[in-house]
Image: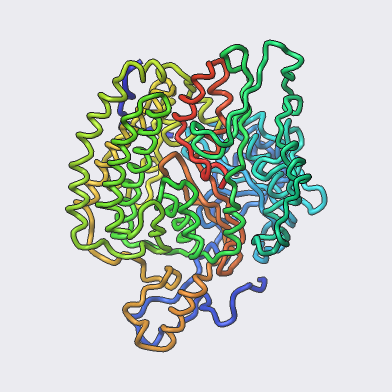
Length: 636
């Protein structure tokens, strides 16, 4: 194979009461009519008011023709993704058709999750449901999405497993049962995934506590600690695997959850025959912090800092899909300058994250020097560029609903260009030090390849997918934040092995520098945040200090945050490790009703058994490093 992946710029062508605060600014509240130059009052988008029936999407018409006896109920959403409800008893049949039989099938299960519908007020046009399950499907051949939902009763909610159609469904379905108590018929191992096995209840049900202060004082007597330790003991028979005592050629090795090579609290149980990996069970959840539950108790605005901590190496790239989703719900148009500032910072954080990957990966396979050089490059980036702009380093919490926190500082352009001049020679040196090193190649080339078909079926995105050979980048195929203004290539691999995954990351840093230089040249004048009543915090100028009505509106916008129209949206972005999105549901209040976080690392780590089985135990560290995951991204 080639020493590095070939660059490829060609793209694949494929009526109820609202729970709003009394006195809060309401949709259509004309508090600035006395001054025609004032910012316009908030008008809820037409879709939020149920206005105007749009023509049914082609894929829904296709389903109605294929299943004429299935009563699909169409739902209008803010993001424009075709969305329909279907009966639970027919869901497996419909989903199997879409995933396998349809012309240009929906080969990727992008996301799957649940919603506790019992306290939701704005459900106009939706079937009655105590719980619901959604399936977000993606077809690369069509360049299209589809969201299907199933309504479930309160007593014994249950769906059929679709892991036989999309292997990625395995963990998503376990998470569904873990968080909501929704049964999955046909699932082979419906045990806790993120919560420990002794946990009582299902955390994303509305009645489950969301704060530690809602529990009593913590007590862990020795007897209970011993019982918990026993429940954590790996029992092969629970996974359908032979016991070591029944097979003298088999040994089970426990790695983690505290191990340097696992890049965080992550446990891997490996079944070995001599040095060969014959079984592998990943065990996650040790880093679970309840990020989705916390979204339900924060305002739309105050949840932004929590997104920083998801992919904790990605900084503001975590903010972007969330604020884009809220902006779509609110109908906010972000100014061009703010859009390009976002691109500038996202590409710098992509470089920062990839430098960590590059250095630690080299260290994982035995090259000890590169990590020091690359962390120095990252420190220079933080010190000279990111901190002067945002005031922060790893977690600047800098994007805002409607724009960014503040405008670019004086002298930003020269700092940016200096770094763009600094890094390329360093990357060239690292090519010789790492990528051209014969020992590194011996450890990575030909190890754990994956085909495009398998990558799509397992839900891989970003560098993992592109390394397999599919030149798909959402900045190209579905441009957001004006990425279509810029010229850059999409690096791809040929085999999807460990070397290709590393080489794609390396080339992406060069492409990010290319984008950044174009952003510097294209940066327009203008505001750094939208003059919209729901932009958060709202802009003070030009009228906040001139009349009491505008001052009150600004005060409420700062303290309570925006009152977001009822609706649903999910806008995804090309993050540092793959595709990210926040599926947000608003019930017309100042806090989300439900936020489902889709991260890249969650499905990426799930594919580990496929990648490692048949290789030697020494290859496990090589494969783990090539995936470029962080456990906060997996566990949320």
